Image 1 (cartoon, helix red, strand yellow):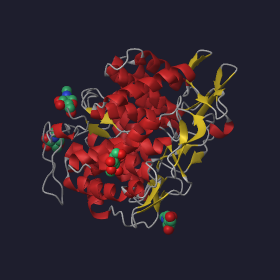
Image 2 (tube, rainbow, N blue to C red):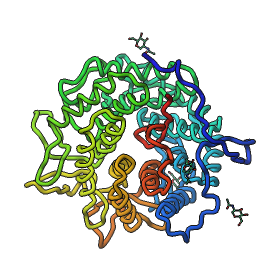
Image 3 (cartoon, rainbow, N blue to C red):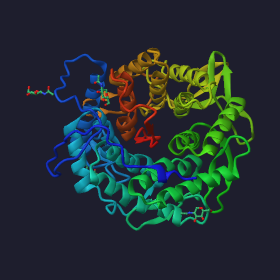
Image 4 (tube, protein in one colour):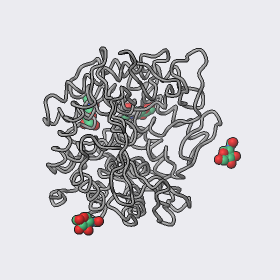
Length: 478
Ligand SMILES: *[C@@H]1O[C@H](CO)[C@@H](O)[C@H](O)[C@H]1NC(C)=O
Ligand SMILES: *[C@@H]1O[C@H](CO)[C@@H](O)[C@H](O)[C@H]1NC(C)=O
Ligand SMILES: *[C@@H]1O[C@H](CO)[C@@H](O)[C@H](O)[C@H]1NC(C)=O
Ligand SMILES: *[C@@H]1O[C@H](CO)[C@@H](O)[C@H](O)[C@H]1NC(C)=O
C-alpha cells in the first residue's frame, strides 16, 4: 500500500547557485529574481515582502533566537526554546527570494538550533507542524543539507511520543533533551495526533528510513478503523486510545484532522483517505453546515447533541481544503461549499478594524462575537482559503478580499517593533494589543497573502506541492 518504491530524488527543477559564507553552495528550485527589489515600487506583492521584512527585522532586533517576538516588551517569548520564528518563517523568506534573511536563518539553524537546550516538554503537534515542517519544506526548496540533518535529529526525538505510548495514540508532549514523552492532561486532541503524518512521511521519503512514516501512518490507520459515529469528538484518551465524548467541531482541536485526510490522500494516493474525506464532508453538510440568515455557517454539535451556531475563524481552513478537493476532481459540489464558506469568512472581517475576531456566533440570524472572543492573532485561515480559491477559480474577488485584509493588518497591527496581536477588533479609537507576534503570522498569513497577490501564479503549483497545516509546502511525488 505504501508508495515509497516509486519515489525518487528528482525534485530539483532548476538550479541556482546560492553562496553562503559557511557553505560552499546549495541549490534552489525557486526562481530568485528579486535581487534588486526596490520598495518604492507599488506592486502589491512587493508591499507584502516589505511587511515580511519589517516583521523579521523586529524579531531580529528584539528576540533573535527566541521563539516569538513580544513587540511591547521588546523582548521574546521562549516556551519551546527552538527559535520558532526563524524556522517557521524560513521558507517564506526563500519563496520571497530574500537571500540575506535566508542565509542568516540557515546560519542560526546550523550553529544554534540545539534540541538539547531546553530540558522541558514541548508539544509534539506544534513542534512537528512548525519546526519539522519548516525544516523539511525549506530543505526541499534549497537542498541545504543541514536542514535535513536537523529534521532527522528532531524526528528521532519526537518518535518517543509514539514509542512510549500505551495506546496507538501518541503522547502529546516530549522532552527533546531526555526523550521522555508524557501527557500532562491525560488526553490528546484529535487534531494533535492526526496532523503530524504529512511531516513524518516526508521525513521518511527524504531519509529513506520508513520508521517515521510507519509510526505516523499507524495512528491514521487506527482512527480510520475505530471510526467516529458521525463527526469526531475532539478528545482522545491516550491511555486506552478511545474517543472521549466532546464537541464535534471543525474548529480548535479537531480542524486539521479533516484537512489531513485530503492532504494525505494527495500525498499517498491511498484510497481510504479520499473515501473518509468525502464521507466526512457529506456528514458536515448534513449535520453542521447551515444557512443562517444570509450566511453559510460551519456550526458545532455539543456534547448533548444540540447544534450550536458557533464558528471559529480556524474553521475557515475548510473552504481552502474543499477548493483543493474540487481542483483534484474529488467532488464537484465541493467548490460551491468552498465559495459559500469563504463568503462567511470574509464577513468575519467586516468589523471596525477590518480584522477578524477569533470566534463568531449567530444570534437572531446575525453574525456577532462575544466580548471575550474579540481578539485577533492575525490568523491565516481566511487568506489561506482565498489563496486556494483564487488559484482554482481565477476570480479576482479573492485577491481583492486578501488585499483588504492585508491593509487592515498594516493599519491596526503594525507598530514600530513589528506586528502585534490585537485584543478587540471592534475597537479602533484605542488599540489594546496582545504582546506577541505569532510565528504563524510570518509562516502562514504573510505567505498566503504573498502567493495570492503575486503576479506569477506558477510559483508552487497546487498539483506539485501540498502545504502542511502550517503552510509549509512539500512536493507531491508522482
Ligand atoms: C514564475 O515562477 C516560476 C517558478 O518559480 C518560474 O519558473 C517562471 O520563470 C516565473 N515566471 C515569470 C514570468 O517570472
Ligand atoms: C542589481 O544592481 C546591481 C548594481 O546596481 C547591478 O550590478 C546588477 O546587475 C543588478 N542585478 C540584477 C539582477 O538586475
Ligand atoms: C527579556 O526577557 C528575559 C527573560 O525572559 C530577561 O532575562 C531579559 O533581561 C529581558 N530582556 C530585556 C531587554 O528586557
Ligand atoms: C504499525 O502497525 C502494524 C500493524 O498493527 C504493526 O505490525 C507495526 O509494528 C506498527 N508499526 C509501528 C512502527 O508501530
